[in-house]
Image 1 (cartoon, helix red, strand yellow):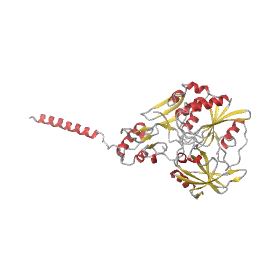
Image 2 (tube, rainbow, N blue to C red):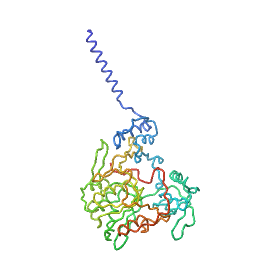
Image 3 (cartoon, one colour):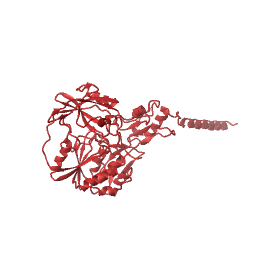
Image 4 (cartoon, rainbow, N blue to C red):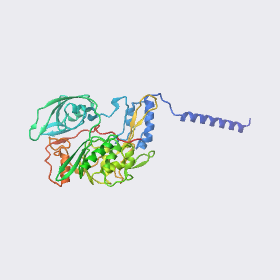
Length: 451
């Protein structure tokens, strides 16, 4: 055999071995079904595809760690909204006082003493069923009297507890503090909440007031009925109380927006979604956003329920988030939106659930990543630090806190004064609101879309 022929044979042999070696090296590693590596490899690939900030993600790293811990390491530093849960592991779900016991609380100092103020109580919740009411004051939590040193840790302890012993009192300007009493709560479930509405007459003006606790799938018909009723009663002003509304479904919020906004058309732009290079940007009209999850009520039916208003007053605060903020921001191109209260939570992202269903018959992890940033028709958005109210007001000005919908309640009273042109100042603040450390708050982790 000639030397050149031998060289040629060896060359092709080398190329063949090299190609076989490359095929082996490029073959994806197979992990044992149900193992952490099996799950985390899937998590990484899904996040690389959908996550808004996928280009900033680290390398795969250690796939053997707990999936919830692994997921958190993929998030950018200021993303507090994305989360992962396992349907069969309750401890993986976001925890909050509202979801466990059915109430919201803030803390104040008044005349040298410290109190937890019950701000919101859900219907048919452990809190409501055991006698908690908005405006009541907590003096002790699990036997510990509140003070400047321990109130924040006691607040955290409520979130991690399954049982609460509270000592409460109440206060009114006329009679002062009532006698204390004890209330015990066990962690439990709270289901759908009712929407409260009424008509308030002030200086010959009929004002509709609607308090909405959450935006749930299928609420379009309910919003239609409520606004039709208010329209029949000839309201000319509307107050939306969203201060304890942590968000929910986009299509539900869209349905309410269609009724409220004057002179809109079905093809008017409502939402701009901006995703990564894979998802791109998606623009949705009012009709498209409605039909994404609400198909039983037509755009025309909702538009016909529009009352005779050209502006809305929105009562808001640091628990106003997600779909509630979407309404505030995305109605601005179409009407005057007057916000009253405190800065909102700042959730300007949306996403949809991504479920690991690779193993037949087994429920896997579910990811809720931030997939899109949200903007209105004028490309206004980027409110991750919250939306500042037009009229700033703290609802905790006096130790007497009135029920929502009561015309003496601070934020509603300010809205009524603005409507009637009354410029009289509210009572002087006599207490100090106490800050809480940044922990999981009682808002929806993500504005939900239908994939």
